Image (cartoon, rainbow, N blue to C red; front, side, top):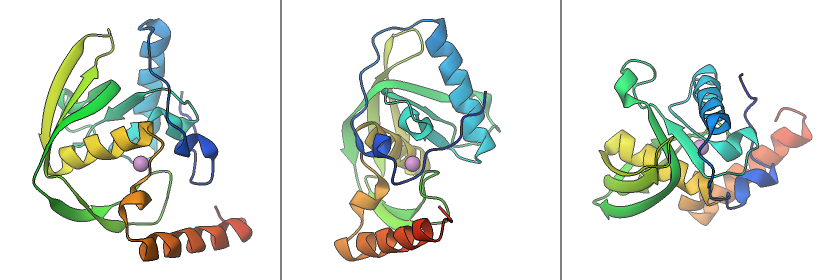
Length: 169
Ligand code: NI
């Protein structure tokens, strides 16, 4: 099932998501739906709040279907190590048609649970590091806007409010 993507302005995106404690078939089905919804929206990462579900689940595929082994499921993820710095243009499915340069660590390690609840660690660099950070932020109710200067963030919010008023958001 393809879920519509929740956009900026919906409070679910700015609330900390709840820890997952039950690893059952419903969770598996939800994760399948999250991958399907992410691909349908042409994204390389999706967090559950972005489909209106406030639970600490994210999916990532930085290869966008090219490498089936690149599919990553993160349940209750925590960033446990960061290294370096990297600035790159970043977007978010919940803030469509906007992109901004965001500086983030270049190498990160995340600790998370897999679909069966087993704890694992994964280290990623560059785009994968960025995706791990971006999606983990989502689960804390944090959007990439929060990494921008106040000036840039306010400008983005003003533009979005204009679109909302015009009924184009
Ligand atoms: Ni996002």
